[in-house]
Image (cartoon, rainbow, N blue to C red; front, side, top):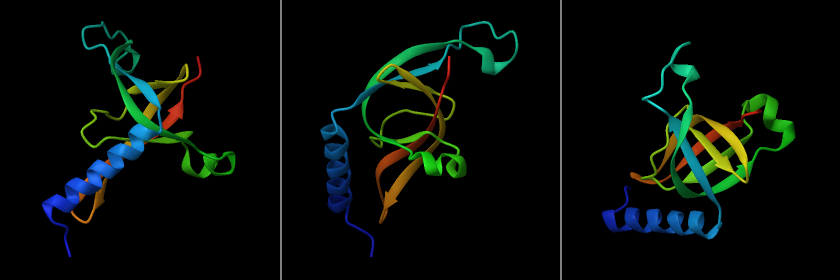
Length: 120
């Protein structure tokens, strides 16, 4: 049975409250579209886009090899975030690898984003 619109909204509100209650915020950086790209799209500098709430979950070391990621973050369903964006949390920069909207019986509750740590 699919949920009613009211139930879907309730689930989204609950997920948003959980994400906000984590007290964690991060910064999103996007490729500077105005910058010259000498070596292709991958060499563009990244510029600050916004600050947003999320829940950060570091991947346990024993699963790093299998999952090929360093952490996942949960973000609000309307948060703009895309593969190849960079995020920063506690002074550490990460690259977004995948973005998946979680669907709960017909309603999107939040997005789960897999990230890998960038080493300077």
